[in-house]
Image (tube, rainbow over all chains, first blue to last red; front, side, top):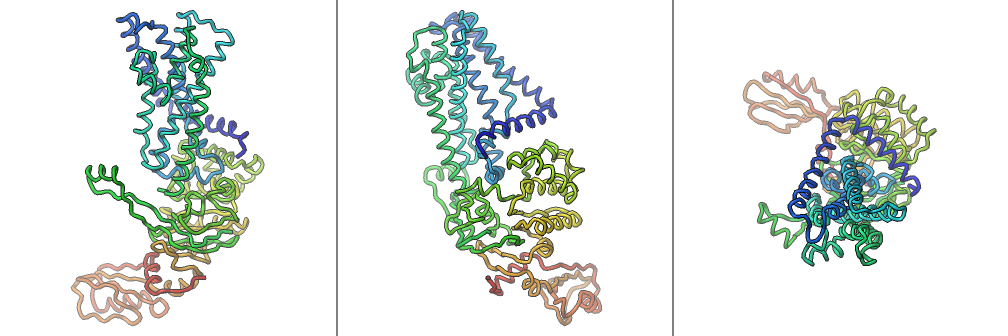
Length: 265
Length: 329
């Protein structure tokens, strides 16, 4: 299929997905409620901690909330558009449904992602947006066009970092069927990135910068937005990191796909 | 149109001892067993043919189909579909083929058939005019109209298969692979599905490769069959030959009121199995008849129950294998 036709095909998948969701309205409501409650519990923890200790190693509540909000936004992009990567092993490889993608004239990865837009991510996106808005107001960040563009690029790059890491790890499904444990180990590292990296031992900071670079999706752009002194590579590195990571992830995916073709199931 | 030369597929299956210890051991020192699923299979299928590809479970049917459709890469040998390598030119190949995987649906469970078909049509980039033409064509040939507003989850098995066929043929592929298209369907629905397959083959010249357990499918549709057993192609030839050779036999089983001993076997029949109060005979339909065989037995002993069986596929395969019927074209 020509590259140009993919967006409209995605739109068709999305419309039908929404149609299905509307049919199961109760599921939709329960999903939305649980997302909000999970986010609420996470935020409550932050608030309780921060109200006991007025600053966290020199960081104030609004500053922490900005970092927290940024990573929540990036994560929600992954959650909305790439959640199906989690189920590659269980729902597609093991059941043989993946064979169907292989006999259709579209890219199998596109098909996998388009197959299920995850609406639960919308709730996370809204929560992240509200957090950033509150934090920015408290920190006196002015939303000039430049800041808005910077912010948008950082959130999108962060989303790509999440998707690339999940993609890289989900490929293990082509060997071990259930890829969820592998994906989870890497994915859960983003929990660290909800807080300033400077509060952690050096090793964790390095890990989240160079190996599992969630730092580029939260801490680094946040310090830049706060007007703190931020090295250039930290402030503007996210798009490059995201691009490199995505290229690697796609190569890993193609390698996995070749393996699938030579083993079958 | 489809050409396989010495097609071979070897799987590497991890060896595991039972229990947790075995699992841990396999993690650190993995061992593999090689299993040859398909071995040196060669055949050529011409445009417009309907070929039955048969064999018992695990004989290598699905593996062959997966190699022909580009899902699997052969370990050895070559496959060409319309002159292409189906795996390396996967997308181009996919445009020209349609696949029905008997048990697995390609449609969206919760969507009305009309919407599912629209999605499939868009995936294959079928333009609107052609799409409408095919829908109205299928409305007639598959009686699809009544199914269009129904979600797949509410369909019966037979309705699902009709929907599945429509989805598979919406881009008018030149080749269709049908993996068990009539499995689990009742006789009437089977007939309709077969008639439809025959029709697209005759009207559009679609080449059909059919795997099935149902000899009725084969008899109704195929002039040529390929039989695979243990990964090896043991027969490639006309259905007629098989029918002449094996189709004339029937199996009849009696359950008797008293113990069997010293019974005269009617002419034209052989004993297959004889136990306490059951007797299985095989008879040649061209030499005798079911009524003559059963009358002869009934005149000798009281029969409580009897059943008649047509030769099934596994029996045919076994006999071909043993008899070494050599007619590889």
